[in-house]
Length: 209
Image 1: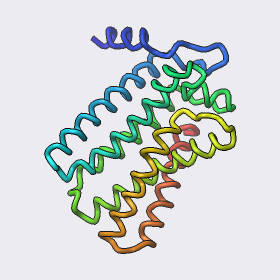
Image 2 (image 1 turned 45 degrees about the vertical axis):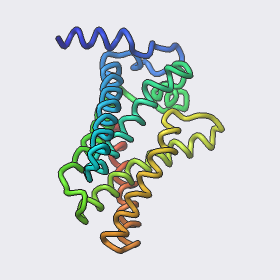
Image 3 (image 1 turned 90 degrees about the vertical axis):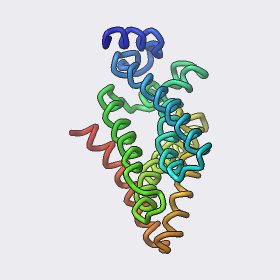
Image 4 (image 1 turned 60 degrees about the vertical axis):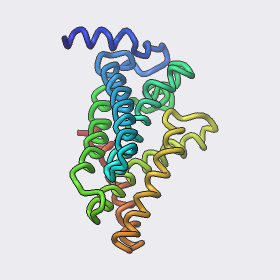
């Protein structure tokens, strides 16, 4: 069964590109691309279901949906629409940054797990607001990277659209939740800074350990 899944993933994976990252088209990256798509669709359906039921857990589902849709943009949608040079790994490689297949697994898995942790807390609680803001801060740190590079290059950065349209509003929602429940702008600012630090420290640890 596993072999069949790998074969199917490779058939529809972004093909290797002469000037790109050699790991593009590998089994690992191909399977992660399918995981991103499946989670984006699944979490989108979950969010729609929770919204239809007016469930407070709709808030819990939003970070997972925005993250996985962002990952799908980076690894699947951008290369499908704009060509293999806009696969995130190829785009980064052209900019002088080699991202290995193992890094794709670890960095993105940490992000996915962090968004799932939010479901462990009651949406009406203060702790939920703090965790929600922290996770959204790690995501908006990634948005700052994409938008900053896109501005410097005057070109599209894979992941830029979801960064602008989803990550930033999600973080603003997190700030509003903390201001509402903790009533402290200082706490909101501190959590945002910690989230930024956590995002970049995680990337450094994965790439250097």
